[in-house]
Amino acid sequence: MIKYISSALVAILVVLSSNLLVAQTRIAPEKPKLVIGIVIEDLRHDYLNRYWDKFGEDGFRKLLTQGSFCKNATLDYLLAQAAAGNASIVTGSSPAIHGIVSDTWYDRYSDEIVECLYDKKMKLVGNGAYSGKVSPRNMLTSTFTDELKLSKTSGSKVISIASDYESAILAAGHAADAAYWFDPAKGNWVSNNYYMEELPQWLKAFNAKLLPELYMTKEWKTLLPLEAYKESLPDKNKYEKGFKKAGSEFPYLPEKLKTKEMPYEQLFSTPYGNTFSKDFFLETIESEQLGADDETDVLFVNFSSFAKIEDLFGQKSVEMEDAFLRFDKELEHFLEYIEEQLGKQNVLVYVTSSSYGLPNIEYLQDNNIPADYFQVDKAKVLLKAYMNAIFGAGDWVLEMHNQQVYLNRELIDDSNLDLAAVQRKVSLFMMELNGVQRAVAAIDLQTSEYTEGLMSLMQNSFHYRHSGDVFIQLQPGWVEKNGNQLNGKTGLAASVPLVWYGWKIKRATINRKVSIFDIAPTISSFLKINKPAGCEGQVILELVE
Image 1 (cartoon, one colour):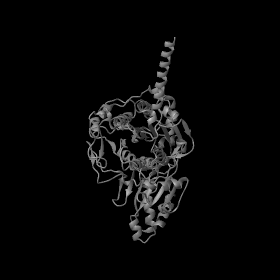
Image 2 (image 1 turned 90 degrees about the horizontal axis):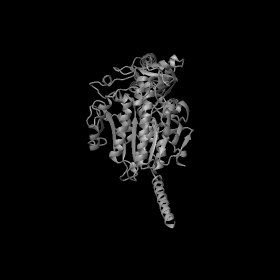
Image 3 (image 1 turned 135 degrees about the vertical axis):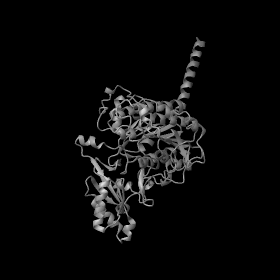
Image 4 (image 1 turned 120 degrees about the horizontal axis):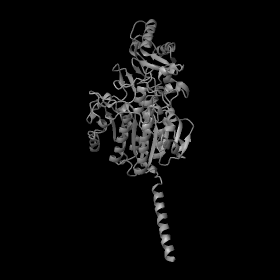
């Protein structure tokens, strides 16, 4: 009997010791070993609500119910484009501070529209067909990962990946170890000599697997029977542009998506682009051994397929719904990997969006919602005629782009005119045009301090070197159209999801307004480092208390 009790006690002690060991391994460290920043382009609250009943338990639902969900995170500036958003997330500041006011802007020196990251000194690294003349140098302040790098002599790794170089580079910041983006002509992940002189061997091996070739042979058909997509418009409807050759109805055949000149261009216009990004994302963690030691590493990943699918098919398309249902499964795989391979308690994840999708004007009009196009070419002709009548014949207007008017300052100066007075006259004229809600002279954005409302959003999007002389806000539902180009992403009502998961994050719903400017200072607080130099955001106290 004594012998039996002794054996039982030993067994109990073994079980208790084992449970204690497991509990100890699940205790979160003082700082996360790995921070993962996930940006899903054009992610909107209504998508999550619309498809909620069809999501599985371990993807979006798990994030939102087991993490901390900020339900009212806003893009607190006017031009809610991807470049401005990606820069604002990591700097904690507005475009007025970090300088990335939009994806492109008019450059007075070269007299042309330029990309926000253009840098003629850089060159491509890797097997790609496109120029690598880009860098983060136009971003005028530090990021939270720059501050992390400055706080350490060695150890922490910072890597960013995205299908486009803008998203990859802006998230990476100035001091990252690597930024990788996709070359649609060659089907490879590439970088440039701002970060490295040669791709690492593991990435060369990953490129050699030719996964884009595999994904471009897959037929895109609906995950569910077509009649199950009740949350969407019919598969065949007049609001879809569709693929040039493959059309706008399921299924989409791979031979019609692939072209000889640009064989992989459409990969990220299908759900397989998100899958491919996830594949590379997990490979990066494994190959770089991210989160393997006590020095906090940071990995950024951008999922861009939703924005491209939305552009081709619209916000209420079967294609968009199918892409979300498929991505829910990719998210489930990612979370499973985090928990099994790295430990949920070691990894801090945030998920948000850097941009806000365009409405479909025809769909709104058909539903009696006020909406229309602001035709830039017509507005430009009218403004030029007005200025010729007021100031005499001359090339007074250099460009009209991204809801901004760029005036010929040299001609204004040579004509002994006051620039501020001319800007104000132009702003008053622009407000007479259909579709314009407000037009503001640059001088007023420079010399006044607006703390709320539309004027504050305008001011947050204004930078003297990169912005125009007059800033225009269109009426709700209106979209700027310049030829075939639409530039209507404005932040007047731009609220995006922001979810935190892992490490020491509690289950919570945060209903008060927060800003995407608040992400960088909150992570800086977690990591016990300085906030970025131009940071305007505030720590989200509900996450740290």
